[in-house]
Amino acid sequence: MIGRLNHVAIAVSDIDAATAIYRDTLGADVSSREEQPDHGVSTVFINLPNTKIELLEPLGDDSPIAKFLEKNPSGGIHHVCYEVDDILAARDKLVADGARVLGDGEPKIGAHGKPVLFLHPKDFLGTLTELEEA
Ligand SMILES: C[C@@H](C(=O)O)C(=O)SCCNC(=O)CCNC(=O)[C@H](O)C(C)(C)COP(=O)(O)OP(=O)(O)OC[C@H]1O[C@@H](n2cnc3c(N)ncnc32)[C@H](O)[C@@H]1OP(=O)(O)O
Ligand SMILES: [Co+2]
Image (tube, rainbow, N blue to C red; front, side, top):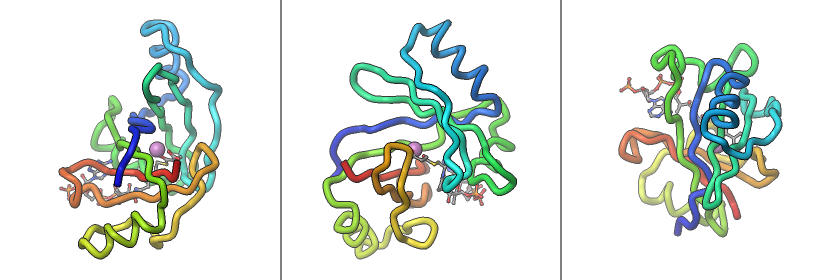
């Protein structure tokens, strides 16, 4: 069911400093910073030849990454995102198999303008897992 690795996300408290590390120290191609108000984060994408890194900084008072950063103040890997062909079919299969879909269970439009869903980390080996319709 899952296809390509779309991105690995890293939560950080200072996205400009984090972007500078990827751009200047690691020599990577970085996108501009964008606010994602529907997701409570700001994002920068690091474009690698075979996948992307998504840098996340909390946005607003109720960010879903706030607690994670309290526990990991120097930042840390927050989620992985896999592509699927049909996100509703994927969701229905996962729910039938007992996995917990986060939020209201309906896809939201993600950073690439495509529908995304999140699966509970406790159901996937301690790893928060995002699905994005390819
Ligand atoms: C823009 C978009 C895109 O790419 O298109 C994005 O990525 S937006 C990316 C930001 N959006 C999201 O992450 C949306 C989905 N996330 C959520 O709904 C939330 O972050 C939860 C995953 C439910 C966690 O919420 P919260 O931190 O408030 O709850 P909590 O502290 O009670 O966590 C419950 C348990 O899960 C663990 N836990 C929390 N976040 C985790 C993570 N990222 N990876 C692995 N484990 C994690 C906690 O340590 C805790 O375990 P213990 O009980 O053992 O201590
Ligand atoms: Co993501």
